Image (tube, rainbow, N blue to C red; front, side, top):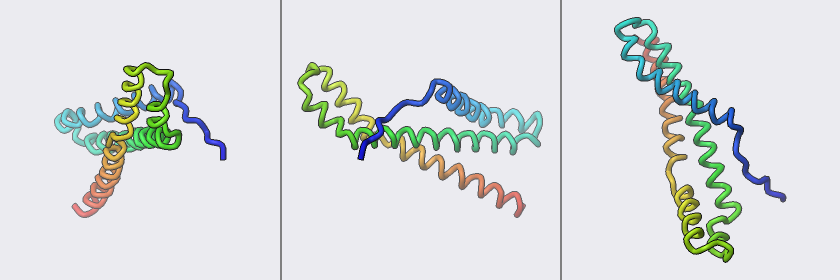
Length: 131
């Protein structure tokens, strides 16, 4: 089976998800203002922030998994260790970077935030009907 090499996404995709994350961060922080200025906007703004983060962190989770999968499938750490074309310093730098990504728990963090975001929405919907 031929492996499909990993590739990065377009700049517009990167900027789009950056703006989505920024929008969500701003939404959560502006809620405090809406509590005093326009209380009826608190819940819609909260939902916008949670849904934005839901999509953003799912995207970041997929990137993290893709990086780890590429390191494992291509045995990059082992191959870089064995490659004599790099200087010792360069080889150590690449090994450090790849090992750091491989050991990182960021994908788990994104996954937990994703699940908690879904749970927060479900709890809010349930409580809105009960209260």
